[in-house]
Every structure is written in structure tokens, then in C-alpha cells.
Length: 189
Length: 312
Image (tube, rainbow over all chains, first blue to last red; front, side):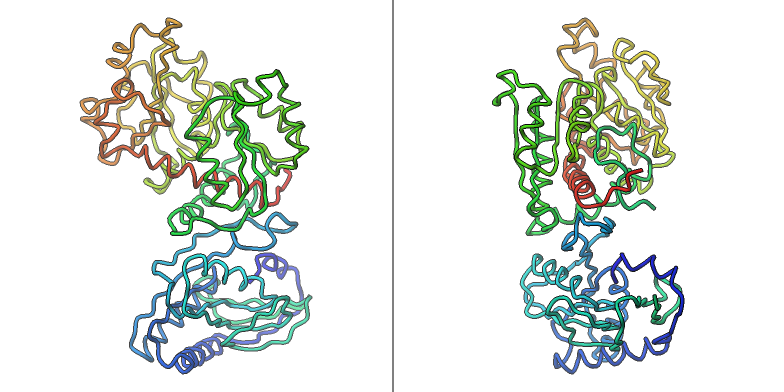
């Protein structure tokens, strides 16, 4: 999720819950199965979550994949701040967190994981970051929510839920590891 | 938590807030990871031009700034003024204005005159970083020192540090004193009385002229380089006497804490202020300081050129 959107939602009114905690769990389980199906197993797979909520989602997917296929899937954390296309512009926030990918990506099937897919610029930055680390065999994208309004030709391979939104709305994914509870909310501007 | 630096420049730690220091240290952690990759480059400052304007000789600091800029994909230009029009008598402001006409995005300056970086910072619209001005400040050195300590000790607050040597002529000491006291460390300075500035205790430090007492129970010892010129100015009688009274050797460290850190900004006078066994010994983090220097400078370049100043 874009840091810019973060604090703005506090001032916004109407709130609707798109997914509750159980909905999030079921969706992740379904995505895990889809990953196994599409890749014909979990061999050579690695998960890379985009900081910060993508990382928690990646870890949850890893534990489900372990249940399904019995294999330990490595999970990495990617911070894309240094690859953003709006550095130095109005509203840019310079909080860089550490990228921690303790395995080589060369030759691997990378599943990139993020919470919300919106303009696609975060994913573009993530692709550049991963390719700087090595040449993966392929990169697939798993997102919990696709809210439309792409500004780049980017699409997800695995989508938890498609939510048509207007630009004035904010989509907030909450995860226990960071927000104390699980769920997806939409804030109308 | 602050997410941007308040001013457009980094001229010294005296005017920097603790939260800003925290931000720089946190950002440097992420930058350090970039230096550990096979391809040590991120596109962050692509297309930005950084000019290193060094009026005093330097290998370590200048190279560190150059590598830091290049790892962020910036274009770095080094100007050492001995080989430039400054030799022909061009003034600092003129040099600054002429460089500005070539549209750089940031200037790093080292100068023997105190305040030279501030003159440029006030005259130019771009960020200016002080890489050392006379005996005044060397903020990026102090920041990398703080980072190196924090890396080992996890926290800075409450740590006891002794800075030993020619405090009077040391910009490294001054910047560290400001930075360390702001981060809650207990600072002691030690050296011959002739090399301790008058009223230095007003900076919030304890003053010692006895090295053994100064380093008793400390967590960090920072040794400063003693310069031969000072002997010629009669500030100490001989290198041998200086070494005997203020040189750090293994015998002096007999009662030291197991996790003591020994630091030195470099370049070292082996055998004078620091013995080779200590410099290369288990307490020494001197080489880590150099590695961290690149990460800290990357962090500062990023925060000055990328983050939006809050203008406070």
C-alpha cells in the first residue's frame, strides 16, 4: 500500500468492511492452492513480500504451501523505496526499511506478494529491484486486493478479491501482525 | 517519528535534532544492505549530479562519498582544488556560483576555514554537506561513528565513551561530542592539558588528563590521531612521551569490559596513539567504521535529495 494513503484515511468518513478475518484466511488458502496448481507443485518456488504487509501475507502463504505440499518455501522481504519513481517529489516519504532476501533469486520461480494492487507502480519498482538481485526463472504476482486504476501495464496472477473503487476511496488491509486484527476495509472519501 | 530531515543541508551535528540522527542511522541500515549485494547499485538518485569540492586533501572521506553517490546511481564529480582555478585565486562564492551554473544537485565540501560550508549553503539553493571545516565539525564522521556503536551495542543511550587525543584541533571530536550527548551517551574527553580546549566541559563532557582514569568502565574508546605539527607548536614534547602517557595499548586495557569497542577515525599513527595490537585486536571496529561510512553517506545523500524537507 502507498505510504501516501496511510494517514489520510483517518479523516475519512464512511467505512465498509470488504473482507473479515475469516475471509482473509480463506482467500489466502485459495491463493496457495492456485499457486501450487499453476506451478505444478512448489518446487523451486520462493516468496518475496513487499514491505510491509506483503511480507506478512508471504509468510502466511508459505505456511499454507508447507501444509499443502510439505515443502519449506523461503520467504524474503523487499523494500522498494529506493526504486520508486517519485523520489524527491511532493509527498514522498523517505522511510527506507531493510530488504532481507537471504537466498539467491537466480533461476527461481519468484512469487511476489503485496496487499493491494492499485496503480502498479509499486510492482514495477519491485520487478526492477528483484532483477537487480539476479535473473529469476519467472516472477508471478499474488495480491490480496486488486482495486483497479492501473497506470502501468501490470497484472496479478493471483487475486484475492477484485474491488472496483473510485480514486477518492482508500483500501486498507489490516493484518494481525501489524494492525492487531485481520480484515480489509474501504474508506470512502 | 520524523521521516525527513529538517534543513536542506548537513553542516554540523550541533544543530541537528536527535530524531534526525535516528532517521539517518535507521536509513543507513537499509543502505548497508545494498553494499552487500553482488550488484551494489540502486537507481534511487539516477540523473542527480553530486560534486565533491575538497579544498583539503582526503582519500577516505572523498572516496566514501564517491562510492556512496555511485551506489545510488548518481553522477559524482570530484574537484580537488589544488588542481583547479582556486589556485588562480578564485573565491569560494565564485567557485560555488560557477559550479551552480552547471546545475549540480548537491555539493559536498571540505575546507580548512570554519564556516565555509555554511557560506556556500546560504548562497546556493542546493543541499550542501560539510565533509569537514577546519577544526569545527565533521558531521558525517560522527554519524558513522554513532552508527558503528549502535550496530554493536543495539542502543546508544547510557553508553560511556572516552574520546582521547588532540581534542582542541579535532572536528571529529566536536561533532561526536554533539552527536553523542544528543543520543544520551556519557562523554569523557581525555588528553594532555595543552590539547584540551578551555571550557570544553560546557559541551556536557567530563574532562580527564589521565588516560587510565578516563577509560575506566567505558563502553567505547575513540582514539584521535596526533599530528606532528602540534609537536612543532610545542603542544607536547615528543611523540614518545605522548605515546607513553596517552597511547592506547593492551596493558592499559587489562581491566576493560569484554565488549569494549575501540574506534579511530583514521588515518592511524600505529605505535603512537594506538598500538598495532589494539588497532588490529578483537575490540577494534576501525574497519567497520569505514564500511559504515559509505552506508551513512548513502543515507544522507538519499535523505537530502529524496526526502522532502519539513522546513521546520
